[in-house]
Image (cartoon, rainbow, N blue to C red):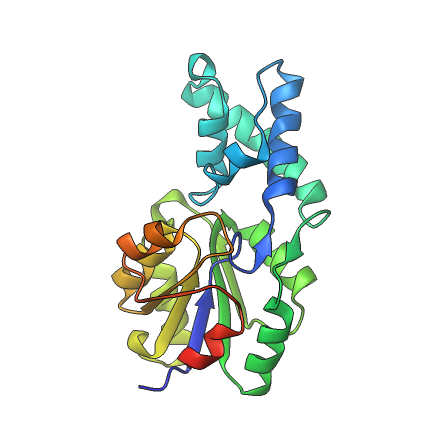
Length: 215
C-alpha cells in the first residue's frame, strides 16, 4: 500500500527539546530549593506530557497532587518563555519535510506536550509544513489514546492504515498500533531501538532520509 500521510511525534522525533524542557523544570525546582536533575535523567522523564514530567522530577516527599499541580503551572509558565531557545530540528528533518511537502504528502504533529506549546513550536520551527499540530488538551486524550490520530485521518479523508506514525518512544508505537497506523520508530530520540521494537515498531530508522524509502 502506498502511504499517503504521516503523523509525527514532536519531542525526540522532529526536535531536540531536552535542554529547554530540563532548564525550565530545574528553574522551578531551584526556586523551591528542591534537587535538580541532569539532562540524561530528564531524557527518561519526557514522553508522557509535562504534568507527568513534573511528577517525576519532584522529590518523592513533595509530590502531593497539589504540589504537582502548582509546580506544573510554574513549569509551563517558565517553559513557554524559552521553548524555542535551544530547541532545534534533528539532522535531516528540515530536508525531509521539504521533500515530503514537494511530494504532497499530508503531514501532522501529534504530541503529549501541551496543545498551545505544540502549536507554537511546530509553527515557529517548521512553518508551512504541517496542516495540523495537536498537543495535549486533556489528560484523557494523552497518547497512547489514538483519538486525535484517528481524527487527523478523518480530516485527511484517509484510512488509518494509509498513514505512517513516526515517533521515538514506546508510547508512540502503542499509539500507532491503537490507531491501526504503521508504527515507525526513530533511534535519534530518547529511547533505544530495542524499546521501540518491543513496543511494536514495524520499522526502525536511524536517519531522517530513510523515511522516504518506506513511502
